[in-house]
Length: 228
Image (tube, rainbow, N blue to C red; front, side, top):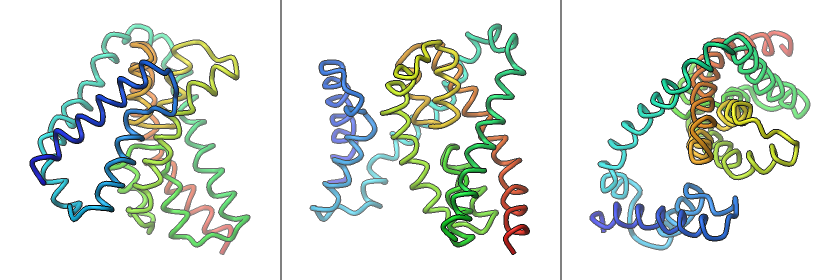
């Protein structure tokens, strides 16, 4: 069964992409549907998750290279980014404060446990950073990773329809919003929407990751001190 892992994963992805081009529905997300199909397959067969990961290891290597390739659209839009660097930085900083702040406020209202708050405060940054920051705060990295994936998929599916509904059509603004809220998964969707959206989403993803790592720990510790 291990040798089927790559053909199955690639086949599900390509099939979903083909359906998405034909029916133009945000629900036909090439990450969400293959993930759900693979989860169902693992649940009803004797294929272990470790075996599947072993079989798809070459895809993991290519994924690392694909992440590095996000630097290309950044380079192509470097002139525009330099002109608006301060507003972009301000938007990303505000996004991080809203994301972490609302998490802590809601946690205070429902009396959530500190380890749960530490796990969900990093929900809007990419998985490795979220797990690392969450672990440093005493959270549960597995919960942090799961929430990051859920938030990313929601952003990739609902982000552009919601922005169009709100009248946000500027590609730079769209890219920053998606990258700040939906990290790598959203950035992938932004790259499919256009080169400008992809570049600014990549930039926002990186900036918000760095700013969250800097701002989330003191915000969390301040919350713990105030609620002690």
